[in-house]
Image (cartoon, rainbow, N blue to C red):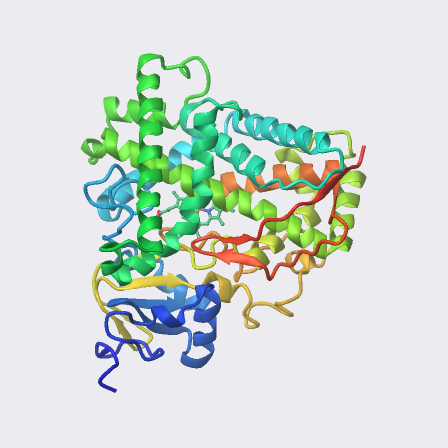
Length: 476
Ligand code: HEM
């Protein structure tokens, strides 16, 4: 008993926690799986400890919807060993880790800028299609030899975000660019160590694997910050977009100069821009490219689904025509398959942790100020309260009786509420254009003697399938 951490009054139930370490030792390599096991035992509102930090994990859709609609639950963690306060990308700045007025002003700006960039003109779609065609060429050139598509996919998806931010894409041969994109997966994997190290900061005092990884992640972030600063400076010298569609940096500079028409202009400074660009780059790259790789895993496991998708494409559009956004409405089964990949793959299994800004009363429990609040999207996506046969890969669960696409309320891969993903529209367009065109051009096969299972994956802030090689058999 004396070895247990004392819980605050009315804190949600959970497993006994050790002083200093909390529940970190029992978390294992797949935290979402462990939290789902604990949910079975302790309920939908689970109280655990990461070191001495209080954490509440929500696994019920309606409770999550309620709490994530509140300002009081819209904060983010204030301390990070990777994003130190005096580093190139300090915690509390940018889009993902800011809070209160800074976050509100810049989230509003990011949403409206992304909307303006994605709609009105087709340039975003054209850029995505150019990347898809590039990747299809590479897969054709693999000549039906086993090929691991991971690096090429990440580079293409990064390039789309670069187009959005700077109005230009990079040659994939550009060493500076590919170095930058290599680091995305690395930092996504290291994210977990930030959790471990903030539970046990003494780990940074002597050489060990956690310390090495944290230092690596800091260097990666500094590298990104330098790249973004270089791009912004180039932009200032030659605003290459003035004649074309405006981009994020251009829109930001305009707002800085012309003002927002209301308060918050003074927060449009260079550091906040660099941090926002890094956030867009990181949040918009690994999630999308990992989902495309999950699609490949599920198509290998469910060849009948792949065949149905290909038939739908051929019957409604034909092999020869590049699929565009306007084809989405004609391909509901394909769209449903993509939803099912997101439900089963869970690219962001625990979302991004929120933090309470004040004490919150929830279903009879008290969540004290400065508690992390985690959304267990992984659990919600496999909960039999919201899904029939949740373990089955079945795209038809997203189709109504007339074969039209539906979106059941339990489907929340982009999270919900005030901090829900602000790149959802772009992500959905990217996923459709990449996945539908890849399956229009290729049938996916496993190299002889190899196996592939959706149970084999690495878990950090992103759930990422273990590396694999596939044979891409051209259809025409
Ligand atoms: C936040 C999922 C693509 C930008 C989030 C969150 C999730 C998520 C679960 C956390 C929401 C919360 O805190 O409750 C995904 C998935 C994607 C994807 C599954 C792709 C399949 C993108 C893209 C962009 C983006 C393409 C950029 C254009 C962001 C940003 C945030 C965010 C900036 C932070 C929002 C905030 O804190 O207010 N995303 N995302 N995401 N995402 Fe995405």
